[in-house]
Amino acid sequence: MNLFALGLNHNTAPLALREKVAFSSEELDTANQKIRAMLGNLAGGGIKEVAILSTCNRTEIYCAAEDSELASKKLKEFLAESKGVKFNELEEHLYVFLNDDAARHAFRVASGLDSMVLGETQIVGQMKKAVKTAQKNHGLGVFLNYLFQKTFAVAKEVRSKTEIGAHSVSLAAAGVRVASSIFGSLENSNILFVGAGEMIELCAAHFCAQKP
Image (tube, rainbow, N blue to C red; front, side):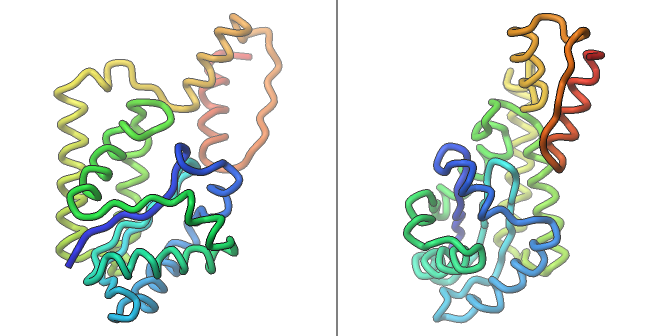
């Protein structure tokens, strides 16, 4: 059995494509089950364990499979078909990490080293939520359980033993900083928020703290 992580993020794909392949919370259960049902046999690479991490900046699928090379190929096809994206358009933006590299990537993601805002803490919570969803759908086994236990332990150690968390900032808080650097005090500013979902709520909360 081999570990692999397949996905795209803000470094490899434009926003328009990231939006297309993102999974809503309602889709995650079905997608987890479909991947194991369709690709769990040898013809699909023997994917036995699946966890899906989907945020505004990344969609990543962590798997344990008997044949990681075949499984990653079939998973790319599944992702393209299920999201209505042309395979060639999608493939050039995807990355695949195998075994040790997959673990190293998971460590970097959870520690905030792979985030748009270096050291942000929201991602580890999103990752824990992805693991809970996978667990609920029986997508976790020995391999992914161990991977994520180690991942969260590493993230905690990075926070406690390095300075990465000394000035940690979320993307929403970074937006406030940029706006303040341009306009100065925001108390006399009118601010319009355009969007839907968790990120726009966080932005609203951070900006409203400045009493615009």
